[in-house]
Length: 163
Image 1: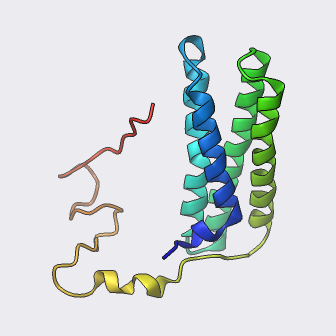
Image 2: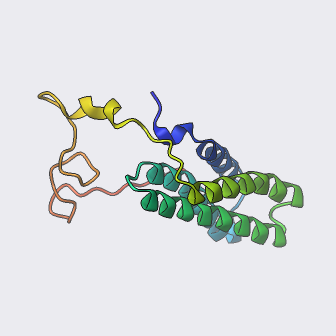
């Protein structure tokens, strides 16, 4: 079973770019650590916003998230230019990353202009909330507990220790 966003070519290319960015970031140490952090954050933002936007109910919401993803892709291109200017990336490495980014930006631009939809069929998930013993979260706050995410109880933070 696939989610709707996994069917989008732009999502798949953004995941390939993310892998490229992580491989590049492994070489960035010391004085380059701030650029590394920015590159990782911006490159993660692309597929995350594509996925979230594709799951939104209105076309205006979808476009907004696709525009954020597009902005993150442009930010990645600028980060790469900075790294090349500082001698950290070669022109060939920069071009390799930019080839993917140009495709991503082009596809997101088109998706933002259209009312095209590739969404997961909501009926595929209907079974999640039925029956006793289900762990389906019915409080609409995007987690698996019963609080309202205002810090009342059980608040958690998501962290990534990839670098």
